[in-house]
Image 1 (tube, rainbow, N blue to C red):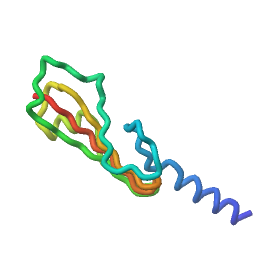
Image 2 (image 1 turned 180 degrees about the horizontal axis):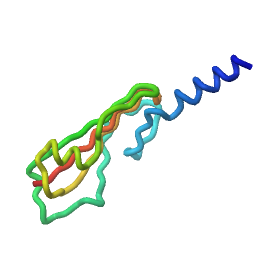
Image 3 (image 1 turned 45 degrees about the vertical axis):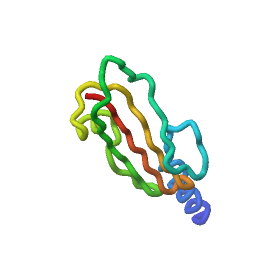
Length: 104
C-alpha cells in the first residue's frame, strides 16, 4: 500500500508540471519554437522596441514572470504592436516560456 501511494505521489508530481502551452507544435521535445499572438496586433503602433520576460522550471518547480506586463516593463513599452512566445520543453521535465512584446 505504501509503495502504491509513493508511486501515485511521484506520478502526480511529474506529470504536466512544466508544460508549455503557447505553441501549436506540441511534442516531447520542443526547442526554440516561436508562436505569435495575433490578438494584439495594432498597425498604428511601430514595433521599434522589444521587451522580454521568461518563466522556467524543472519537474515540480517553476519560477519567473513571463506575463505581457512584465515584458512591457522590461522593454520600456507603453503601446503594444504584437506579442510572440518562445517555448522550450524537454519531456515535460524542463520547460521555459519567454514572452516577447514589440511596440513603442
